[in-house]
Image (tube, rainbow, N blue to C red):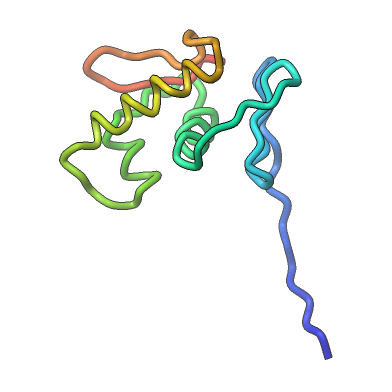
Length: 105
């Protein structure tokens, strides 16, 4: 006898022209697919869940990696740089000097 497994759908997030489907790991901007590495996707998804909230590099790192590191600032700044470049809209993710990053959308 086969057992059934319940699968819950994680809702898509839409912010203007940006659509993120966390179930399928898909990011579309203006209907065009943006290819992201897994950690880039995770950082973007985290920021988009808390629009306009300032999240520190340490908060972002620990939420995604679930561990501590001394080099988290460099790692997160590189990922933010790549996200801005791939999205082609650097204003979507703002830097708050000496505080962290926030998603504006």
